[in-house]
Length: 155
Image (tube, rainbow, N blue to C red; front, side, top):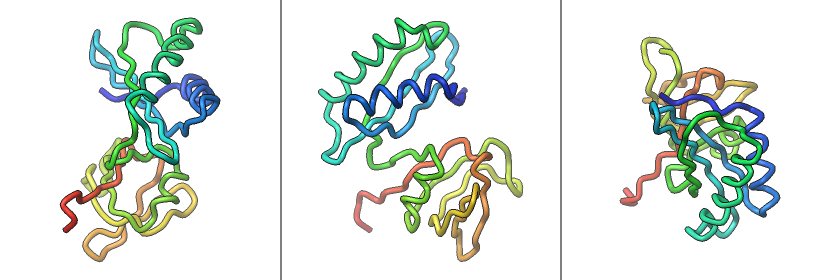
């Protein structure tokens, strides 16, 4: 089960990542019984290497342990956002208007939870997806997960 990361934890991690010279893209927590995962995405203008992820992970792990921000056992993963970049904040959607995205909502919207379409615009706290020549409005608060869809085959 995916859960939203506590705002205090998210903000603390963002400050740490930014202080280290990286962009904090976002984070997600997957509660999987005794083996939960905290996944943090980082980036920078030149891309992120395995060494970058390892360095951030070491620093982040120390902060999380000392400040005891997350209860119970979990694994920490630090990663680049990759080609299927996750979208966490409304500003991310504004940056990627015109791109094809995949969205999953917390609750069904018109009997549907999964959407794929062109992000046509962002207004207020809603995104607008163009799906088969029809524009669908999705409230940002209803979005569980969203990613850029990249066709790596070049078609």
